[in-house]
Amino acid sequence: MRALCYHGKKDIRCDNVPDPKIEDGRDAIIKVSSCAICGSDLHLFDGFMPGMMKGDIVGHEFMGEVVEVGRDNKKLKVGDRVVVPFTICCGECDQCRRGNFSVCERSNRNKDVADKLFGHTTAGLFGYTHLTGGYAGGQAEYVRVPFADVAPVKVPNGLTDEQVLFLGDIFPTGWQAAVQCDIQPTDTVAIWGAGPVGQFAIRSALLLGAKQVVCIDHVPERLAMARAGGAITIDFDNESVLERLAELTQGKGPEKCIDAVGMEAHATRSIDSMYDRAKQALMLETDRAHVLREMIYVCRPAGVLSIPGVYGGLLDKIPFGALMNKGLTVRTGQTHVNRWAEDLLHRIEEGQIDPSFVITHTVGLEQGPEMYTTFRDKQDGCIKVVLKP
Image 1 (spheres, rainbow, N blue to C red):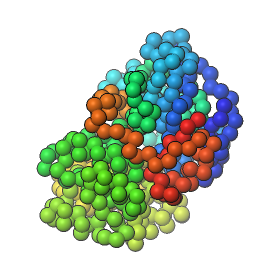
Image 2 (image 1 turned 90 degrees about the vertical axis):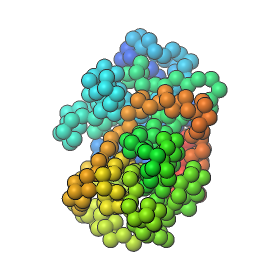
Image 3 (image 1 turned 30 degrees about the vertical axis):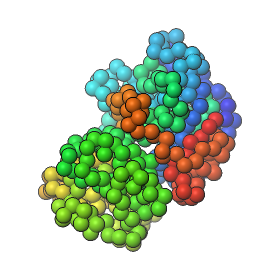
Image 4 (image 1 turned 60 degrees about the vertical axis):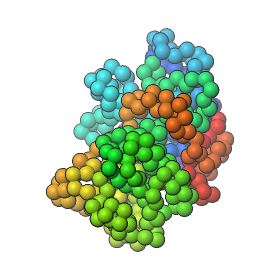
């Protein structure tokens, strides 16, 4: 089969690789009908996430048709159309029973390595670093899905791939980011980043009743999409984020702040952004923390910081004194997709939201390698890429 494979920093190739096979009775094999490139895939592409090996199949946003089912899988049958969450969960461990699917205690095949790095294991993830299990990803013609009697979400008739594909990651991620804010009707929610997750966080915050949502970015196409979704926008290239947020909140600051950027944050003319880049170049820190610092500074006391943006390692110069003395609450984590998927599927069916709004490019799988660069560099108005194997 064809699959997009990692061959090193900035080197993704469309290779011919062996077809996946059933390895456990709970497995299923999915013939992929649609998959997508995610912002967190760019962390692999840019070399910021350790634990990748040459030939690893990448991608964790995918859906398709069940073509083979393990003998112990009673949930799925051949012909079912499913969206597969990016988090692999067993459904049986203590964390899964609590609904904390992204920290499943059993699905990470490299649990010992994750334990050493993070203190405790995370769940296994499709198409990501070997720190999360080294599972083959979904930017391929076929995928083996472990524990396939737990996570896959069956798609009802009448919905297109484009409407439901993002239930596997970015829609629940934006939704969880907003839910973690405990949004009240009087709240201003400030969201850093107008990429795909930021776009869903905007719409989720408004669905959850925020008074106003403010989105900070500098890419014109992304800012226009944010405004179309109901956000007030701040272009950090041309105006002061601090001054504009103060103006919009009568000097009080936003009650809730969402970091939809993560480890590759930057800001034009920002001293601490330049500091982070220098520290990264010298291998003295792994991630850029500009957005986190700015959120801590501007958030109203007793507010909430919600962090769906991915971080992989070590940060420097975090103003923890401000965080503590302002009484801020921090909520973060990979997304517990199955906690939210059914509710969000119903919202799509009811017409509350059509997630296909975020798609700007649809191409064949073989064009995937070049689209990584297009997406990373925000060329051609690119916000979200869907691949068709």
